[in-house]
Amino acid sequence: RPLVYLCTFVLTLFTIIVFVTLRSQASRTEQTDDTEPVRAPSKQEQQAQQAREQRLRELDAKLKDPGMLLLRAAESGIPYAALPLLYLVFNVIQTALSLPAGKMADGFGKAVLVFIGFVSFAIMSVGFAIGGGLIATLWLFVLYGLSFAFMEVGVRAFAIELSPPHLKGTGLGI
Image 1 (cartoon, helix red, strand yellow):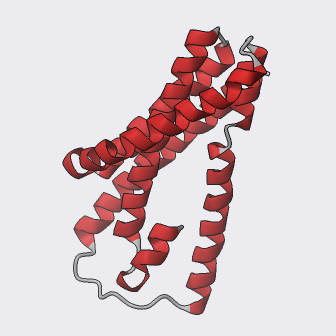
Image 2: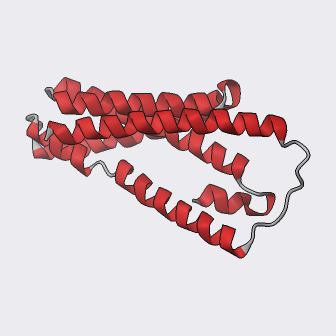
């Protein structure tokens, strides 16, 4: 079972590399394409965008599913009756850190926030692969809440920034 979490760690590292590469390419494009007029996307471009958004929603749903983490917590000796409390810890931490994460995104930038979220998610994945007792699992769920607060706020801020003016609400809703 730890292999699943190590695979998650590798995928997260891959995501970090892709994110940094795309961000650096986007900043180079912004420097050279300042005069290009904004045009409405074609029907084919809209369909391609919708397909990409659907794949992202599916990936997002898989990453946000704490079921595997709760099962791993049960395997490490946490009583089944305590598992809902771990899920509560995740939700409380994510909710409590969302507003401060938004303020950090305004101050430090969205890319930094998403990067920190991915790195903390990678660390959490390794932690679950290694395993541990009650205290270690509790801290891993705290880290899980932190990583999702940072990633969700940063990604939503990017969605607003990258969406065309007439689709800002749609971009945020995705």
